[in-house]
Image 1: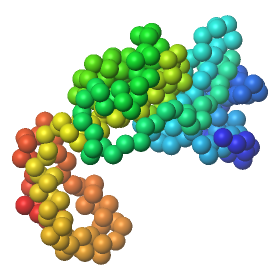
Image 2: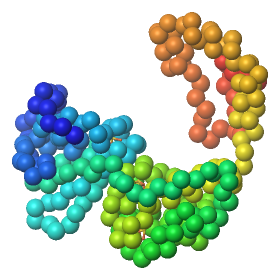
Image 3: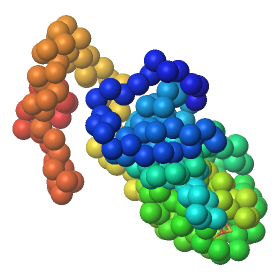
Image 4: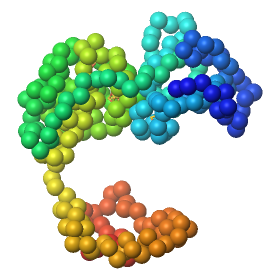
Length: 254
Ligand code: SF4
Ligand code: SF4
Ligand code: FES
């Protein structure tokens, strides 16, 4: 994050302003802004700690406190609206323990998790991770499932993790919850989940070059043509049958 007074958001309602403190310095910013937009309004150019701006990438973990409270609060800067007199700072990349492994060679068991992240047994069950999570994930519970060797359960519970690191930043046992979570999801995806037969078939068809002519056709289209077919494409319904296929099969191989 660097300060650049040229970076101003001119399209916000600036009538109702509130004071906030960014790394100790006071700024007056529109009350309707998220922390992320307030940082930019104050003149900071976000070159780190900002990605999707939509609560998905987890890049914008932020720590803040209100002056009349001892509590350290955490949240995603792009999802948290400023409050009067909040003291704000962003956490940079969080250097949590990250095991290196070859997923092909691992067994989907609790012993695997324990071997790669032995500190998992230091969990004291305090629940701070769960209370810190901006995605409302029961982090403590997925850690408990990982300890018990319930890989599928831990994978499912941690599915919405955006890897922001806020749980790790607060954990008294210094767990790397999000790296443990992604390990369980990888173990589940590689060794437990049933293989999708249609995906296997699609890969075979790619290898056989069956998509080459439709790709050539797409590559010859102009931008407007591509936008049109993209916007008019058939989208698989949420509750589609296993063998759902679009009615228009121009670009797929069946
Ligand atoms: S914050 Fe750490 S010690 Fe506390 S429940 Fe979560 S993983 Fe366990
Ligand atoms: S589990 Fe941890 S890293 Fe994942 S979203 Fe929640 S707080 Fe962020
Ligand atoms: S910028 Fe991606 S979650 Fe906030």
